[in-house]
Length: 355
Ligand code: IPM
Ligand code: MG
Image (cartoon, rainbow, N blue to C red; front, side, top):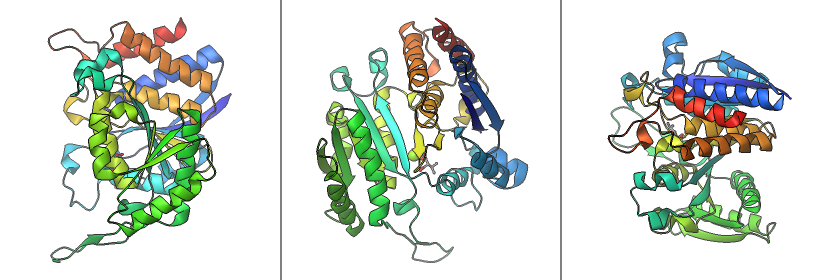
């Protein structure tokens, strides 16, 4: 098949892990006879420095022509001030909104080889395999706000319509059907009106999915259960900010933030795929970056936007093979022992794909 993929390497380690993903996508194209066309564009700090905007028009236009977008990471220390008017992460929020990417899928699973890197006991990590579905274009991050310098009052609002909750709930229920048939919806219905609407709407959508076991948890309790019984979760559905927080929390289960991919989807097959980690400027340019989150994001792109399930599974299996062979980037290497560079890890994955 022929596909047009926009690449947004962004900042920090972004270009290094993107290079890794392109090498692996090229290996997939060669093995399965596909033709991937890449169109590299700007986002984040590098885009601000080149064009003045964290999300230039050219990037949006390129995305509109593409089947999918593969993004790496945005952010540099010089833009760390959260009060600055122009910031790299504004590019992220805007690109999600522009393409109507309301469902953010963040799978978290544990690898026995990495149990030692997670802060929990191995017995709690066994069998952890969850998918967090985070609502991405509504709720607290997109509600009306008042922000004025010097004022003694500011606010943000958590605002949901039934339609916004329904569409992301359907994504979560359908995902549960493909998985273990369990869905946990997160809310704070004991306090927030918007979250009562959330719960009521999820219960209504559940009527279409008699095969799915649905339960509800308050976000504070879920934050605790994620640490005390993480293996009990299958699909988790959460409001934008709750999902943002819980997915960072869940990421520690995998042993390194570098392991985790994500997919942001709308109504069609178009999607944006990015690792959960940030731009890690402190290790940029040193070959220390773990490309696994980026590689697994590329796998999700093949699966969800291009319908290439076999190819997606091939990348996932090759990453597991590389880990099983003992290939470890710095973040997942035992203290004091040798580790491989980003490029060397990539070559191990490419080698596994060729077998
Ligand atoms: C994420 C990030 C972003 C978010 C920030 C950088 C705007 O934390 O992708 O989880 O909150 O969505
Ligand atoms: Mg986040």
